[in-house]
Length: 199
Image 1 (spheres, rainbow, N blue to C red):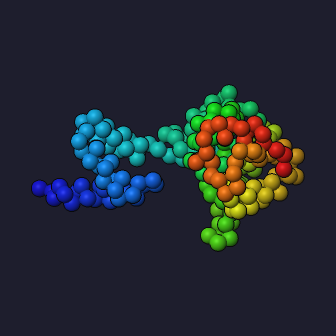
Image 2 (tube, rainbow, N blue to C red):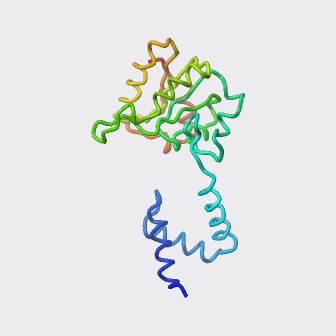
Protein backbone atom coordinates (compact mmCIF):
# COMPACT_ATOMS: atom_id res chain seq x y z
CA UNK A 1 0.00 0.00 0.00
CA UNK A 2 1.27 3.47 -0.89
CA UNK A 3 2.53 5.78 1.82
CA UNK A 4 -0.38 8.21 1.93
CA UNK A 5 1.47 10.94 3.77
CA UNK A 6 4.26 10.80 1.19
CA UNK A 7 1.70 11.14 -1.62
CA UNK A 8 0.05 14.08 0.11
CA UNK A 9 3.40 15.79 0.66
CA UNK A 10 4.23 15.22 -3.00
CA UNK A 11 0.91 16.82 -4.01
CA UNK A 12 1.61 19.79 -1.74
CA UNK A 13 5.06 20.13 -3.28
CA UNK A 14 3.63 20.12 -6.80
CA UNK A 15 0.91 22.62 -5.90
CA UNK A 16 3.50 24.90 -4.26
CA UNK A 17 5.27 25.21 -7.63
CA UNK A 18 2.21 26.89 -9.16
CA UNK A 19 2.32 30.68 -9.55
CA UNK A 20 0.83 32.46 -6.57
CA UNK A 21 0.98 29.43 -4.29
CA UNK A 22 3.65 28.96 -1.69
CA UNK A 23 4.00 25.99 0.65
CA UNK A 24 1.37 27.26 3.11
CA UNK A 25 -1.21 28.09 0.44
CA UNK A 26 -0.54 24.78 -1.27
CA UNK A 27 -1.06 22.91 1.99
CA UNK A 28 -4.40 24.68 2.55
CA UNK A 29 -5.47 23.98 -1.03
CA UNK A 30 -4.59 20.29 -0.72
CA UNK A 31 -6.46 20.02 2.58
CA UNK A 32 -9.53 21.57 0.95
CA UNK A 33 -9.26 19.17 -1.98
CA UNK A 34 -9.02 16.19 0.36
CA UNK A 35 -11.95 17.35 2.48
CA UNK A 36 -14.05 17.89 -0.64
CA UNK A 37 -12.77 14.89 -2.52
CA UNK A 38 -15.99 14.15 -4.38
CA UNK A 39 -16.93 17.73 -5.17
CA UNK A 40 -13.47 19.08 -5.98
CA UNK A 41 -10.59 16.63 -6.11
CA UNK A 42 -12.00 13.98 -8.42
CA UNK A 43 -13.49 16.45 -10.93
CA UNK A 44 -10.25 18.44 -10.84
CA UNK A 45 -8.14 15.34 -11.45
CA UNK A 46 -10.39 14.20 -14.30
CA UNK A 47 -10.42 17.63 -15.91
CA UNK A 48 -6.66 17.99 -15.55
CA UNK A 49 -6.15 14.60 -17.19
CA UNK A 50 -8.38 15.61 -20.12
CA UNK A 51 -6.66 18.97 -20.53
CA UNK A 52 -3.23 17.33 -20.33
CA UNK A 53 -4.22 15.22 -23.32
CA UNK A 54 -6.11 17.80 -25.37
CA UNK A 55 -4.48 21.21 -24.76
CA UNK A 56 -2.30 22.44 -27.57
CA UNK A 57 -0.97 25.61 -29.07
CA UNK A 58 -2.99 27.16 -31.88
CA UNK A 59 -0.93 26.77 -35.06
CA UNK A 60 -2.08 30.19 -36.24
CA UNK A 61 -1.81 32.56 -33.29
CA UNK A 62 -0.14 30.65 -30.44
CA UNK A 63 -3.14 30.72 -28.09
CA UNK A 64 -3.94 27.61 -26.08
CA UNK A 65 -6.94 25.56 -27.14
CA UNK A 66 -8.00 22.00 -27.75
CA UNK A 67 -7.72 21.94 -31.54
CA UNK A 68 -5.23 22.96 -34.18
CA UNK A 69 -6.97 26.35 -34.33
CA UNK A 70 -8.25 28.17 -31.27
CA UNK A 71 -11.81 29.49 -31.05
CA UNK A 72 -10.68 33.05 -31.74
CA UNK A 73 -8.94 32.11 -34.99
CA UNK A 74 -11.94 30.04 -36.10
CA UNK A 75 -14.41 32.87 -35.42
CA UNK A 76 -14.97 34.68 -38.74
CA UNK A 77 -16.37 37.68 -36.85
CA UNK A 78 -12.88 38.22 -35.43
CA UNK A 79 -11.40 38.70 -38.93
CA UNK A 80 -11.54 42.49 -38.62
CA UNK A 81 -8.16 43.19 -40.19
CA UNK A 82 -6.75 44.00 -36.75
CA UNK A 83 -4.25 41.80 -35.01
CA UNK A 84 -3.14 42.35 -31.43
CA UNK A 85 0.40 41.17 -30.69
CA UNK A 86 1.01 39.98 -27.13
CA UNK A 87 3.94 38.45 -25.32
CA UNK A 88 2.28 35.30 -24.03
CA UNK A 89 -1.05 33.54 -23.63
CA UNK A 90 -1.68 35.07 -20.19
CA UNK A 91 -1.64 38.50 -21.85
CA UNK A 92 -4.08 37.32 -24.53
CA UNK A 93 -6.42 36.03 -21.85
CA UNK A 94 -6.11 39.34 -19.96
CA UNK A 95 -7.07 41.24 -23.12
CA UNK A 96 -10.03 38.93 -23.66
CA UNK A 97 -11.26 39.52 -20.11
CA UNK A 98 -11.57 43.20 -20.96
CA UNK A 99 -13.83 42.33 -23.92
CA UNK A 100 -12.71 45.50 -25.72
CA UNK A 101 -10.77 43.96 -28.60
CA UNK A 102 -12.78 42.18 -31.29
CA UNK A 103 -9.98 41.21 -33.68
CA UNK A 104 -7.46 38.39 -33.61
CA UNK A 105 -4.26 37.90 -31.66
CA UNK A 106 -0.70 36.86 -32.22
CA UNK A 107 1.29 35.41 -29.31
CA UNK A 108 5.03 35.97 -29.67
CA UNK A 109 6.03 33.47 -27.02
CA UNK A 110 8.30 35.90 -25.21
CA UNK A 111 10.26 39.07 -25.81
CA UNK A 112 13.65 39.92 -27.21
CA UNK A 113 16.24 39.73 -24.47
CA UNK A 114 19.98 40.07 -24.84
CA UNK A 115 20.47 38.84 -21.27
CA UNK A 116 18.47 35.66 -21.89
CA UNK A 117 19.86 35.24 -25.42
CA UNK A 118 16.41 35.51 -27.03
CA UNK A 119 16.60 36.86 -30.55
CA UNK A 120 13.98 37.49 -33.24
CA UNK A 121 14.34 33.95 -34.56
CA UNK A 122 13.25 32.60 -31.16
CA UNK A 123 9.90 34.41 -31.30
CA UNK A 124 6.92 33.99 -33.62
CA UNK A 125 7.75 37.12 -35.64
CA UNK A 126 8.09 35.34 -39.03
CA UNK A 127 4.62 33.82 -38.50
CA UNK A 128 3.29 37.33 -37.79
CA UNK A 129 4.65 38.55 -41.13
CA UNK A 130 3.04 35.59 -42.91
CA UNK A 131 -0.31 36.21 -41.22
CA UNK A 132 -0.31 39.83 -42.31
CA UNK A 133 -0.45 38.80 -45.95
CA UNK A 134 -2.63 35.72 -45.51
CA UNK A 135 -5.29 37.43 -43.39
CA UNK A 136 -5.31 40.89 -44.95
CA UNK A 137 -4.16 42.61 -41.77
CA UNK A 138 -4.56 46.39 -41.87
CA UNK A 139 -3.57 47.24 -38.29
CA UNK A 140 -1.10 45.67 -35.89
CA UNK A 141 -1.63 46.62 -32.25
CA UNK A 142 1.47 46.00 -30.16
CA UNK A 143 0.16 45.14 -26.71
CA UNK A 144 3.46 44.17 -25.17
CA UNK A 145 4.30 44.63 -21.53
CA UNK A 146 5.73 48.01 -20.57
CA UNK A 147 9.08 46.52 -19.61
CA UNK A 148 12.45 47.16 -21.22
CA UNK A 149 12.30 43.85 -23.10
CA UNK A 150 8.67 44.41 -24.07
CA UNK A 151 9.36 47.85 -25.47
CA UNK A 152 12.51 46.66 -27.24
CA UNK A 153 10.45 43.95 -28.89
CA UNK A 154 7.73 46.44 -29.85
CA UNK A 155 10.28 48.72 -31.51
CA UNK A 156 11.85 45.80 -33.35
CA UNK A 157 8.48 44.64 -34.69
CA UNK A 158 7.52 48.20 -35.63
CA UNK A 159 10.77 48.55 -37.60
CA UNK A 160 10.22 45.19 -39.28
CA UNK A 161 6.63 45.95 -40.29
CA UNK A 162 7.02 49.64 -41.20
CA UNK A 163 7.83 48.91 -44.87
CA UNK A 164 4.55 47.00 -45.27
CA UNK A 165 2.48 50.16 -44.82
CA UNK A 166 0.26 48.51 -42.21
CA UNK A 167 -1.00 50.78 -39.44
CA UNK A 168 1.05 50.20 -36.30
CA UNK A 169 -0.23 51.16 -32.87
CA UNK A 170 0.46 50.35 -29.26
CA UNK A 171 -1.52 50.44 -26.05
CA UNK A 172 -1.55 53.86 -24.47
CA UNK A 173 -2.94 55.31 -21.25
CA UNK A 174 -3.59 53.03 -18.38
CA UNK A 175 -0.67 50.65 -18.69
CA UNK A 176 1.89 51.65 -16.07
CA UNK A 177 5.58 51.55 -16.90
CA UNK A 178 6.89 48.20 -15.73
CA UNK A 179 3.34 46.84 -15.58
CA UNK A 180 2.24 43.50 -17.00
CA UNK A 181 -1.10 43.00 -18.72
CA UNK A 182 -2.00 39.89 -16.76
CA UNK A 183 -2.10 41.95 -13.53
CA UNK A 184 -4.23 44.82 -14.84
CA UNK A 185 -7.95 45.16 -14.24
CA UNK A 186 -10.40 44.92 -17.13
CA UNK A 187 -11.23 48.64 -17.14
CA UNK A 188 -7.57 49.63 -17.40
CA UNK A 189 -7.02 47.25 -20.30
CA UNK A 190 -10.13 48.56 -22.08
CA UNK A 191 -9.07 52.19 -21.61
CA UNK A 192 -5.56 51.43 -22.83
CA UNK A 193 -6.87 49.67 -25.91
CA UNK A 194 -9.22 52.53 -26.79
CA UNK A 195 -6.42 55.10 -26.33
CA UNK A 196 -3.81 53.26 -28.40
CA UNK A 197 -1.51 55.43 -30.49
CA UNK A 198 0.36 55.09 -33.76
CA UNK A 199 4.06 54.34 -33.61
